[in-house]
Amino acid sequence: MYVISEIGVNHNGSLEEALKLIDASANAGVDAVKFQIRNLEKIYSKKILDDPNSAEWSLDYLIPLLKEVELSKDDYYVIKDRCEELGLDLIVTPFDEDSAEFVASLDITAFKIASADMINFGLIDKCASYGKPLIISTGMWEESDIRKCAEYYDQKGINYAFLLANSTYPSPYESLSLGFLETLKSIHPIVGYSGHERGIFIPAVAVGFGARIIEKHITFDREATGPDHKASMYPEDFKNMVDNMRQIELALGTEKEVNQA
Image (cartoon, rainbow, N blue to C red):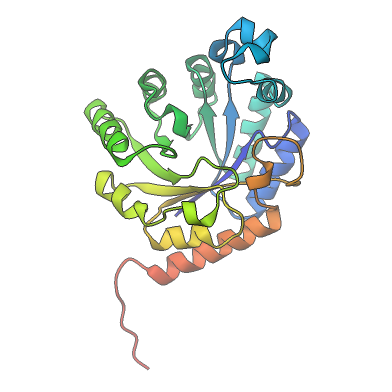
């Protein structure tokens, strides 16, 4: 089982906060930390960046927030060094091809692809061109869409994994559909779970359904301003979750053993 601590933009644009979250993630026993990088000028037009209300759907909340939580490229080299010191893998979600090129320069372990970009084959091909694995979330997509994407990835020889995800933050329990992991495994053998629900137990259940990758958000303050804080876990809860999942992984085993008293 491979556990990813999703720091995302919960550093609020502060390198110091990012490093503290990396340290907390290492203490929780994770395998990797994940960040997000976007070049807003490549994603949005100058008109929208100057006037977020001019978009078809108002972006007057999101655009200023995304500007506030940006880290510099130099910051990411410091982050890479901290991960290496702590023995953590670094995974990054790029939201545009320019960001993917920079991310590749960090010699990351894998690219994470957001649910919205599962069918963004330009970005997928760009990330895959660097020879790193892709971890792809499937939130919001139907089974037929996922199957079509799997066919494309397989034809391209891409090394990838699918994550079951729900795009609501935080996600209500009745919408999680953990049983769909069985369907995902029928599409592609390497699957995982990216959770946005509250609590520590659902990822452990996902492990029981065959999830080999678990991703959860981490924060120091669930009441902080930002898109992900409310669906994130405090470090102490994260550690408890990881400990529980490791125990379940041991209990599941790889083959049946018979012990006689």
